Image (cartoon, rainbow, N blue to C red; front, side, top):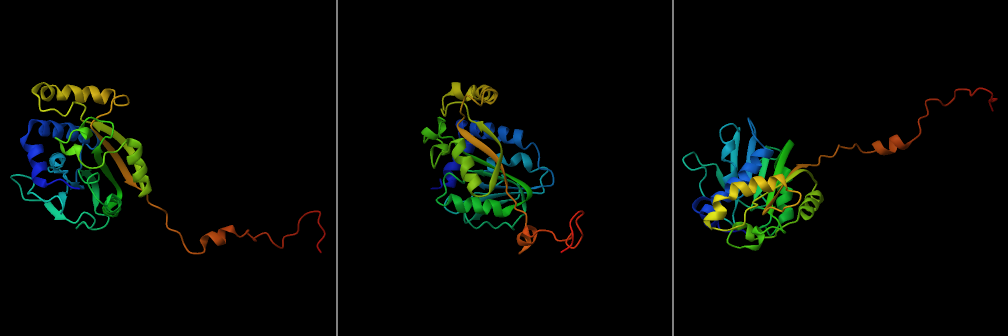
Length: 248
C-alpha cells in the first residue's frame, strides 16, 4: 500500500533524518548516473527528491506519482513537472524514457508485476532503470518511522529474480543508508562517515536500501518458417558426381 504524499514530503523535506536519507541515496544515484544530458528522465513513486541534479541538462524530467499516494507540485520554484497517474497506466509514450528511477513505487504496489511491465514499456532502446527498495536485512526496513519501513522489503537475490521474470537484465547494484534510522543528532552528524564506510565494505555490510540498475531484454524478431528452412539440408551439391563412385 502506497504511503500518503504528505507524509513522504514531510519526511524528506522537513526532517533531519529525511534530508540525510535523501542525500545518501541521491549521492549513490549520482555515482551510477553522473549525468543525463539531452535525455528523458522519469521517476515513479516518490523519486523526485533524487531527480533535481538532472534538471539542468536533461531534455525533460518528469515525476510520476501513483494515484493511491497522491501528488505534489515539483520542483519548487520552477514550472511543475509532476504528474498524478494510475500506477499501471503511465501517460508516457512507449519507448520514450532514457533513464527511469523507482523509489517507493515497487515495494508499496499491490501490482508489482504490472508496474514492471509498465517500466519495460516506456524504456527506449538502450534505456536503463534503477530500482530502489528497502533491504530485507537492513535496519531501515525494521523501523516504521521512515518510508522504508513500509511495504515489501527485498533481498538482492529476490529483487534480481523478480526483474528477470519480467524480462529485465540486472547490470549493476549498490546499497545506501548505512547509518541507523535515528533522529538523534550523533547519527545525523556522522551519517556521511557511515555512507563512505559502507560503500567501501558493501559486500560485507548491508545498507538500508538496495539499488539495482537494469536494462530490458530485447529479443531478435523472427520470421515465420525461417527455422524450418534452416533445418532443411542444403541441396546445392546434388547431382555432382562423387569421385570413385559409378553413377547409378
